[in-house]
Image (tube, rainbow, N blue to C red; front, side, top):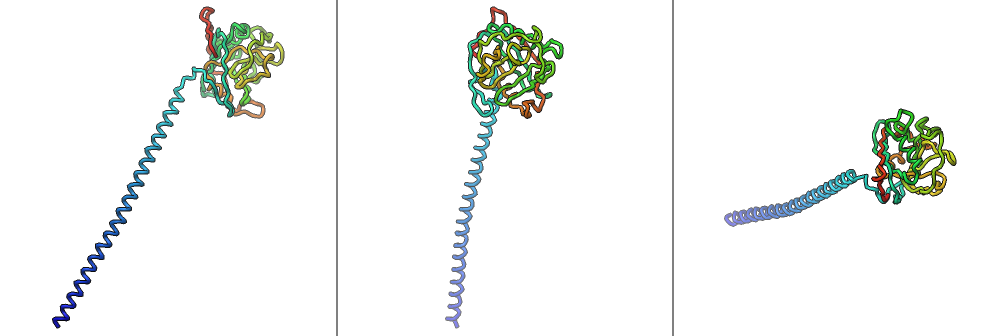
Amino acid sequence: MKRYSTLCCLFLCSLFIIGVCGKDADVEEGAGDDDEGVKISVETETDIDTKTKSMSSAGDDKDKTEKNDENKDDDELPKTIMIDGREVEIERADRTITATVTFEISFGTERIGNVTFGMFGRTCPKTVRNFVTLANRNRPTGEGYKGSKIHRIVKGFAWQGGDFLHNDGSGGWSIFGRYFRDENFAIKHFPFCISMANSGSNSNASQFFVPMIRTSWLDGKHVVFGQIIKGHKTAKKVNDVKVNAYDRPYRQVWISDTWTDVYKKETSRTKEL
């Protein structure tokens, strides 16, 4: 009997020891899983934090770039500009500027920006005099450029305005009468110059056009008398306006205000444009 009791006690002790060891083994395995889980979780959180910081940094850099682009002085003549998906070089010409004319361009009631033209008054004095006079902001409505429309836009090529009589390209008037003769063709066409529109030889009035690209086929047919010196981006925005099949803009594009500045002879500026 004593021997049986001793065996029972030994058997129960063995079961107790095995149970405890098994429990310890389960905890250690579980602890290993938990450690691995925490480790993965830490790595994930670290990666997310790193990615978030990277995205934040990229966003900050983007914001800074956009702000820098916005703060860029459009007064500086850029070397090239994208026109209809093509990079167009803005050529320089050594010409004496005798006056400037600034147009405030608006789309409907929204002011878009200013475009300033430098006038080559020594090369084309009569043409420049006509243009500067018609750009005087104090001229009566319907007798000058202020309030007139940009009535024709050919994307990737040019935009045209100056018909303050009908705003459709059928009218216009010069300060010398209905028309005046072609002054000369000394300056060839180049991107962002300004040239007189006409209906044939010696039919200059008030209409003008601004090409976005080199238009050499117009040399000897239209008088170039200046070029844009400020506001190239605004000029490009005008050329990007959506038009119909007849090159008429869907939205109102017009000259909402004008300014002129005529230099005295002794202060005429020679600019490398």
